[in-house]
Image 1 (cartoon, rainbow over the protein chains, first blue to last red):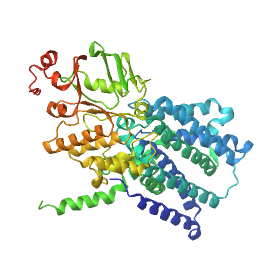
Image 2 (image 1 turned 45 degrees about the horizontal axis):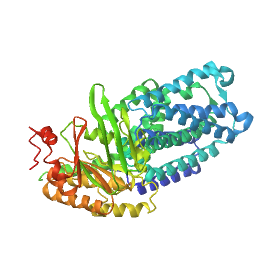
Image 3 (image 1 turned 60 degrees about the horizontal axis):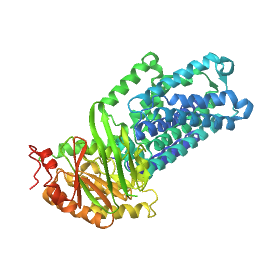
Image 4 (image 1 turned 90 degrees about the horizontal axis):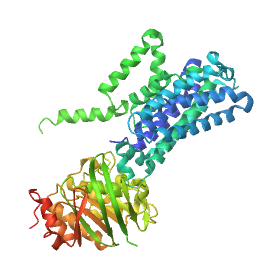
Length: 311
Length: 240
C-alpha cells in the first residue's frame, strides 16, 4: 500500500539532476522562472502533505507560514540582511505553529482545519491595518542581489534537502507513528506515545519548510504583498498535494511540478483557468482520489481484474 | 502498599451510573478475572484505569502512585497496558510496524530485539511483513496482545480477548496468556467465556450495574447468590 521509498529517493534524485541540467541546455529566462517557482511549490506541497497526509489533519492554510516567511524578508532584509531575515521568518513560523498547534491540534473534528483556514485571512487584513510597516496594498520591494540562475539552484537545493529530509523522516519510526495517529489516535496513545507531541512535531516542521520557502518566494518575486496570505495560495498547494497523491511526499512533489507547468500552459485561457483548476480537482477526486502517484498501482490492479475472469 | 488499587471509584454519564463505589486491590503477580453482564461497566472501568475516561470521583493507584486523570500515554509509560475488545490494528502498517510504533519507555533492549521477542511470543513473527489489515480474527487478537506487550508492561489488562475465536484459536491464546502470567506479568482479564476464565485465574471480581458484587476464588464465585441472580435469564452464561 505504501510507496516503496527507495523508488522515491531515486525519483527525486533524478528529477533534481534533470532540473539542474536545464540552465545548461536552455537559455529561456521564462523556463527558469517557472521552474524556480515550481521548486518552491514542491516544498510547500510536501510541507502540506506532512500535516494533511501523514498526521491526517487537513491544513487549509499553508499560506500563513509562507506569508510569515515572505514578510519577514520583505520587512527586515534591508536592516538585518537576507539570510537572517529568512531565519527570522522561519522562527516566527515555527513559534506560530506551536501556539496554533497546542490550541487546535488537541481538538477532534474540523477545528484545526478551520483554524488554518481563518488565520491567513486575519493576517491578510492585518497587513492592511499595519500598512506603515507592511506597505499595505503596495507591498514591499525585495532586492536581494541574487541572480536568476543562482536563485534557481538555491531553490533546487532547498527542494532536494526538504524532500529527502522529509522522506527520511516519514520512513523512520516517527513517520510510522504519524501514520498510526492518522489511523487511530487513541490506539497510538494506548501504545505509550504522546500524540500531541508528534502532531506538533509534524506541524512545526511543516511551518519551518513553508516559512523558509516563503522567504525565498519573496526574493524570487522581488516583492511581497498581502496576496501572499491569499486563500488561493493554500488551495493551489492543496490541489497539488491531492492530485499528486496525499500521504506519499513524492506525490505532492510531482503534483507541484505538474501543476506549475499546467498553469503556464493554461495562461492563455486566462478567464477559464479557475474553472479548469476546479474541474481538475473534481476529476481527480472522482477518478484518482489517491493521486497520480498511484496510477501504476491502479493499472496493474485493473489488469489483474480482467485477467482473473475465470476465478 | 498494593501493586494496584482502586478506591471508591464512581462514574456517571449524566444520570446513568456506570461505576458505583468500586474498590479493590490487586497484588503483584496476581491473575484476576472480571465478570459481569453486558453494560455492567467493565469496559468503562478499563477506560478509567487507562486514562481514556475520567472518573467522577475516586482514586486509582498503581505501584503506590496516583494515576487517576493522567493522560493515557503517561499511564502506559508507567507500565500499565491494555488490549481493546475490538482489535484496532493500524491497518496500513505491517505487523512488525504495528509493534515498532509501541513505546517501551525505559526498556533497555533495542527496538528490533523487542519486536522479535514479542512477535515470537504470540506466534506472529513469520508473517511480520504482512499488512495488519488482512489478518483473520484470531491473529488480530494476538496482534492486540503483542502490541500491549511491546510497551513492556508490568500490569496487563485484557478486554475479552477470547470473543469470536474458534476452539483452536482459543486454546492457543489461553496458553499464551498463561505463559505470560507464569513469566511474572500481573494480569487482569475481562471475559465472558467462563470455562476458559476459570482455568486461568486465581480470583474473580463480579460487577453488576457498576457495583462490585463479589470478589472471590472461582469455585465460590459460581455458587455466589448475587452473581447467579445477576445472570439469571442471560443464556450466554453457563456457570455449571
